[in-house]
Image 1 (tube, rainbow, N blue to C red):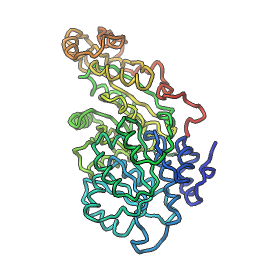
Image 2 (image 1 turned 45 degrees about the horizontal axis):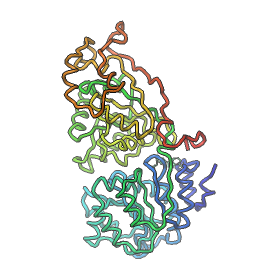
Image 3 (image 1 turned 135 degrees about the horizontal axis):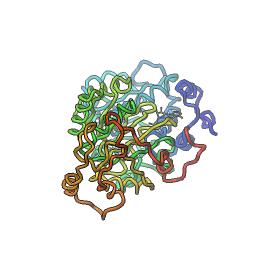
Image 4 (image 1 turned 180 degrees about the vertical axis):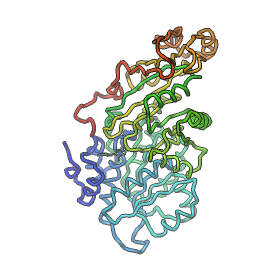
Length: 460
Ligand code: AMP
């Protein structure tokens, strides 16, 4: 197995990695680092959780070592590397990683993002930083205000390029690239490669090496569970799962900002400490919620896809899809937040009948079926049965409601599951704490990968 030293990294960087507990490079690091040290352009197909931040940051830092200095003059610290990310959260996280990797070398870094007072960023920019991590809009604000110069940038990294495209940053990206010197090293990472991303790569990168790591290659321990449930019972099911299984540090995804707030409020009412992050929250609110979540004072963080992008919590154990994403690739992004770098993780999806078409799309993308696991007391046929009280089936009402949702495809076995009349699975139980039926095929892990899992790459 390759070591970081064998990849050619400098002693001061190796020391920092050692202190962070990085023992061996992840697959993407092993592939990207040697190429990037030589100054080649790279196009990386990798999602969060694979170790891609270190894959681009470590060689970038090493190539700046000849410029590292303790001089006080700002002129000695021009911006030499620019790392662009779609969200503030990811920007913060990337810069934190850069800070840690540069602990023993005199290179300065800074993160700039929107939503906070621009004036607080200016004094630090004035003192000079070699590595700037930025979201595109705020970077352009600084360019316009002439509070920074990009004329000496020799390395450009575009992180999560597909997300930047989704978020409408393409015009900003083009403007930024036009401001950079022509002679530079470029690295671009994206989880997906729609046509527009390929065009962007063609226009920015110079004969890049394409490096692909299998989806979630490091996250080999993610267990995926699907619980079919009537949509009106989702909140109760979630509260039940959290309480009965004593789940902590649960990241829950909802489809809308409104749903996100509402769910956090309802969980709090149910005695489960929760907070919400979404696009309408201020940066300060998001940071506060994230810090509390990381510290464990908030048990559940409810988030929308955009707000959750870039969240990185060491060994995040549980991700819940409260609403299934309409875009199957978002599912892969979401569950990529758990089971990182070899840690255990579980991705739980609560699926109502109207979402079965999204489940089919997800299964198609990951190339595997996710067997449904019914939680006793929450059978999908039991539409409006209040939790913990009555288990009397009300199939006729369920039918009325659910059939108003058009099905995109003819009924399948899974649809039949949702239409099945409710049958109490254990009539003798008291209903106070229905047990969770564990997945029949617990380890659905291999299903996550497009290419077969290499057992010896597990946990790297
Ligand atoms: P990333 O995909 O860059 O967001 O990294 C995912 C997580 O894995 C982060 O928490 C990193 O600190 C961690 N990580 C990255 N590389 C390694 C490594 N070689 N060994 C252990 N942990 C790592």
